[in-house]
Structure formats: structure tokens, C-alpha cells
Image (cartoon, rainbow, N blue to C red; front, top):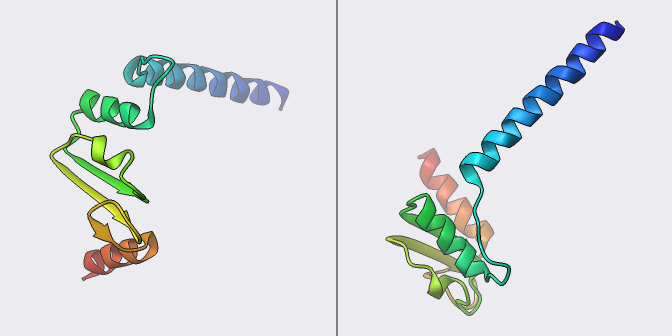
Length: 100
């Protein structure tokens, strides 16, 4: 039983190390210390060539207006974005469309 436990532990450590190493190698983003949220979002969009962007809770478009991407949708019940709705109602409508 002790050998099995040791092997399980070793296997988990081995898997964790290689998964973490591959994650860091493939997905690590290098950016400066003083970065704003919209800079980070734009960096990710550019790095992975995303064509679509969805922002929930745009408020006054602080981030939403600075994002450059082919298709972007912003959801906010009061101001900002492109759709006037609560996030609950927005996702409920999406779910209804998918279920049809």
C-alpha cells in the first residue's frame, strides 16, 4: 500500500510539473509592470488572433472602448457596451436561442 501511495504521489508530481511547464511555455505572456486591464485584454486578443470579444458590465466603456477586435459585444443594463440588458437576461436569451 505504501508503494502504491508513493507511485501515485510521484505520478501526480510528474504530471503537474510537465503540465505547468507546457502551460508556461505556450501561454506565458510577458508584459510591463504598469499595465492596464485593457492593455492586457488587447495583448491576449493580438497574441491568439481572437476575432470576437464579449465584455459583461461595461459601465462607462473604460475598457470596452479601447479594445480593437473585429466583433465586440458589450452588455450593461445602464450605460456602455452595445446591448442594454442585465447579464442574467443576456445569457438566458443566449440559452433559449441555443435550445431552439
